[in-house]
Image 1 (tube, one colour):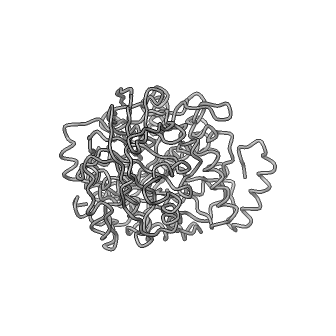
Image 2: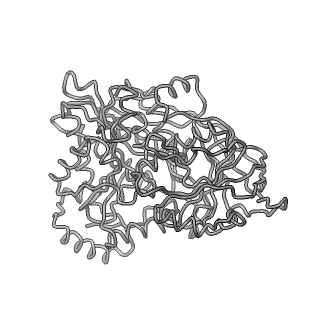
Image 3: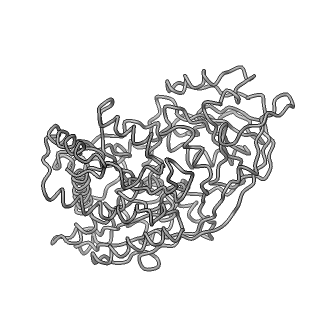
Length: 550
């Protein structure tokens, strides 16, 4: 096994032991395929690409590399402008040094330290100035169809709501995550609230507050308004944008007692209930916030990339299976260990490299899949899944011709491939396809074991869930407490959204090749099945499929 690390000899020894424990032999073909996969990453995550920030010249050079690979494999362009689908974005950069936030208690202001106490959101339109009372809204989940609604009976007009991550144990993890997206935005708009402050729980945080705060200097983006927005909202309500002005911030949980002082409750009490997934009270916090927010607002265009492998069946070739990943990362940012380049090798140059290798594999096969396959490389995932959300609402092929999305984002080949954790697994008939192909590859298929990390809504497959398309996103799996689990958590703590997600980190090349082989076979299996995949009637997300006529 080959690992890209200064401790190559030690890693090779440990990797060999892991493969022996796995019981799945690594072949010379796996080694060669893994090296070919990594060759793409070496280009996309090189220092020369400067982190591939959405819309930057570096992103466009990375996009050209992807297009050149698709052309070399004989794929057809399937965007709106050749291989490209340009997307327009409004860009907001919060100028923290020119902004201020204070808590007002009994008429007396207590200034907050931006970066230490809280960070201001940059993905929406912030008010230039605001003064409003605070109310704690528990988890902030608006799910009346699931008989749960933190907004019910609350007078929120003119107020700023404070929420904590999580939800009650009797709600499925995917549903809790979903409630934090479009339903939350709509409920805020309908309630007349003027802002929202979220508090992450330490157990749900992938890394410490300092890293979260360092990312606050990054520009935020949102999809620019278009004449078709109303039509998209009517057809796909969960893809709708709410272009209202809204104060938004994230509060450091280590400082959150400041919000709860004099309310009759403590943050420690609330956190204990949230960690136990128990119901939360809702109450006035008996204080207000006064804030001034200064922003720098610009505009940028950045493309999705779309390539097609035409299917072999005269009828089924008019339907599409999507294989996707995102190309953008964080660009240049705050220095970590002396480096300012957020290269995004695992997030998500690795996924794009897999898209390219799977495209090559399927295009070179003597037997093409029966359905057509679209290879999609998205922009602006790091800005809120914006590229995939735009494509889901404005597909470059007929919307009802898209049958499934198989997405890769940080699939994490840090160790041998024994198990895959799949987000969205239990929602649709795609679980049968995944388990069938997994068994053939000697891979255990399992659902996401950490749903409160909200991964379900943090990868591009979620845009297709909202559009009623069965979708899966995959990561290398582990057993809780195992060495693999510890390696995964260590990666999140040290490398995720860090300058350390670079080319000089351990990667299990043969395991990546085995994953690519699995996903290519899964795409073919779905493409060749005459029965179209669909959401299970037991799934909450079945409603999106029926609403949109998928």
